[in-house]
Length: 131
Length: 165
Image (cartoon, rainbow over all chains, first blue to last red; front, side, top):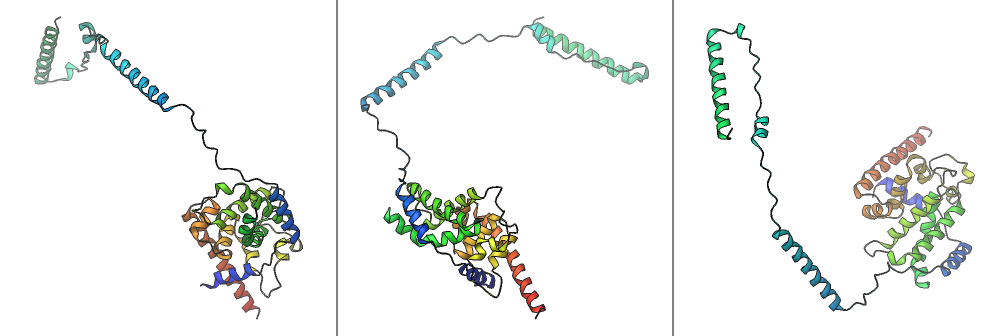
């Protein structure tokens, strides 16, 4: 055992304290007036018969089954189909910000070809969706 | 009730000694002991046998001492007139100053309690943790800190006494 622990034990033993007779009597008198509290009050036992709980369970199961049947028997709601107009509205408009004056001839040609391809593709899409 | 009185009989003096280190006056310590035993008796049904009985009693005692620790009472670390210190009045005359007196000035309340339960009451770290409602790791760390401070104090005092011859 180390020196500090020994010293602490020794010094604690140096503190001489005893409960006086008067305090002893006071405590005993106080304890006589105290009643130990019972453990947490348990829930009172149910007076309902077991048949009641069986009936409740069966009723619950029947109600759940009825709800499931009702939900499944309903017609599915019609799915809203988007109109072509709405589709077109969603097609992004490509904003070309090319400055033709600054382009060389080959690039200009390439740009013309690309724009032509885009127009064709756009036309194709319109045909596909029936416009 | 007599069975309870017999059961706590072995702890009364030790509890009072502990409470004396926590309270500002001897009367407060006696009141705290009385409240502790009354509460223990009243709530004896809530005692969990997995705990040591002494741990449970000390936990109640710590709570009761804390209730008496009102703002208008002295903090334990504060200086007070020695003649009014109830702990000093119970210490037998000795050549060296009682280390627990120094501990009250050097350590905070919880660390002091942990040190007391460990070295004066021989409680295990787990029991101290339960009594203080702290984790075992907190208890270990603070016991170590408390030891360091008191070690430094003890070594310093020895060096001083050697220097003065």
